[in-house]
Amino acid sequence: MARSLDNARDPDALVLPRIVACAALAFAMLPCPADAQAAPGQLTSKAVIGGNVKQHADAVLAIMTYTTVPDVTTSNLSVNNGATGNPGFGQTQFGGGFTISKSFPLYVEGTLAYSRYDPIFIATDGTEQRAVPTKWNTFSGTVGIGWDFRITDELVFRPILNGTVGRVSSDLKVGQSIFNHVTDSNLQFLENGSLDAYGYGGSLMLDYEHYRENYEIDAELRATDIYLRSFGGSSEAVQGSAMAQQVSLWTRWRAPTGWHALDRPIRYVLEAAYSHYFGDSAGVLGFNDLTSLGVGLELDSSKYPIIITRTRAMVRYVFGHNVHGASFGFAMSF
Image (cartoon, rainbow, N blue to C red; front, side, top):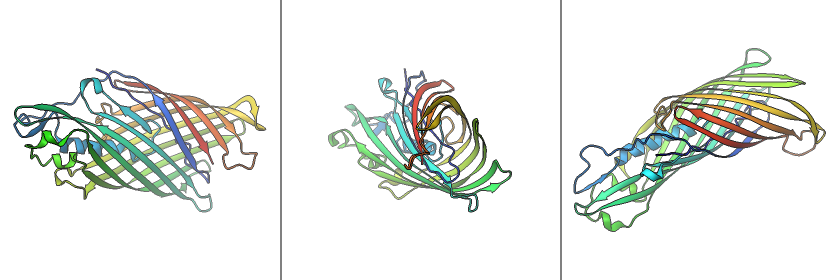
């Protein structure tokens, strides 16, 4: 049994009047035990066996909690065990943020995320059984508004209010004939149904910036608590809720390599990040924490009148309990 894990993210400082846009592509393989099981009492003549639809929809909301917080360890994530019929999952997230200025320290952040969840159900009419592949697509966006309280010249305390909206849509990938005698209300969601969700909560962040001519240090410690709740949708059978609770630490060291390009020094970058998940986020993908170690190069174009001031390429190694993977990340600062 195998699952694949894709992981990448560049949370470039999210500070001071520069906006950071992040894009990443990653790949990896890992061993991980399967956990999809049929619920008791599902082997009936009018049932879908191999997984309860509402339970899987609740799991989608729990997995959505990974996309609500800017996080280096879960920006691009893929979990797949198609060889055993277990659900596959993949997500991509883009995000950034900035503080307007020191004189007006309003902090604004935002993330957009897309995820795909491919559960497998088994339908039966009493005489025939058939695998029912479905494809659930999730789109979500999170915004945050905070205020910087400067403790020292280099240390900022930043409370943030967060809000999230999202939608899960289901696309049934099998003909309708198998369901002629199946009346389970859970199927309402499988048949091109949808589920909307909203979330609210907040974060507390300590942001440390220590910049010198020959090196730069950034560090962020963040605790986040966001409540997700479904609303509307095409089926009352799959309403649910989930809690996103996470503590993360991200650090970065930048220093000149001795090489120059564009009349500026080329910097090498060292990065380390750790995230621990609580609430419904804990264990839903098989782990409670992830660690990321990265190394890269940064090109400085700030001397020239172009919108991009820095361009950075990173290679990262991500690992956790029974999880490991390599990734490549690309980011630009504006």
